[in-house]
Length: 163
Image 1: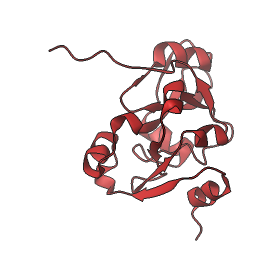
Image 2: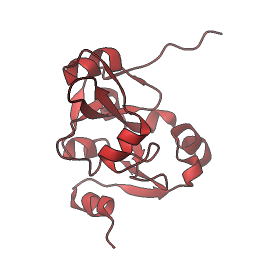
Image 3: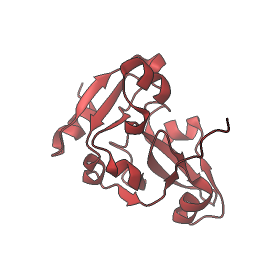
């Protein structure tokens, strides 16, 4: 049986690497600690939902150390009065992937894909691999190669915690 992620990546003219991981360590912080990657190079793909009838969705890619600006930037881009993170069931229904393994590769064609501009500044990024058992490592140009729209300030760097 052919692997749709690998088949899609093979069509792209961007170098990439598939890295296996323990599914129990797929969440970003645990993955980085266990496998020696930097949080600043890890990019999460998060599904969001705009509260409307019918609901509207988008996939957003942001660096792990930043926070998605759902209440302003995302909501405005979705064109809705309210927006939030999609729950696990909705994420799985729309993408076919579970949280912790969501990848921007092979998402439904009608699902907008937005990437925070900070992601594009990295030399290489770690992305979900379509399951909790692998990650994709590639230069961020791979995202625009698949049609992602670069959005300034899609995410924000949170203030440091008080001491």
